[in-house]
Picture 1 (cartoon, rainbow, N blue to C red):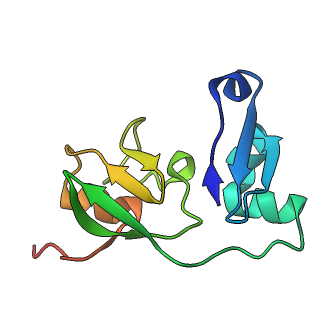
Picture 2 (cartoon, rainbow, N blue to C red; picture 1 turned 180 degrees about the horizontal axis):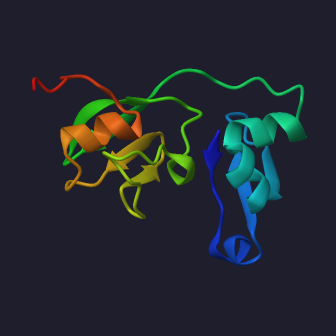
Picture 3 (cartoon, one colour; picture 1 turned 90 degrees about the horizontal axis):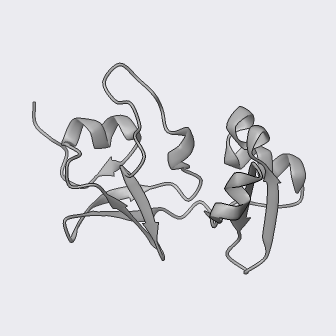
Length: 120
């Protein structure tokens, strides 16, 4: 499942998600922000089963880890150590691209399963 919301839909407070089979669903943005993308889609489509295979995360052209198919950058954890900002992650096809300015700690706190864990 991936978020394919257009600017026009954002202006109308809507979010559109596309499933692996090409089907789409459009939901109210408040519902997605309140319950998260996964729960909102499950509430709207009770028969839908999510794909749990991980999506690769790249930074500066190198694969650095993976994220769950269900991870949503708009509802990433906001912790004392990491506060999500627009542009930290962007989806390009079948991968996430992490901003080069994100450090290992930011990536871990955002939920990235790192290939090479930092040694602190």
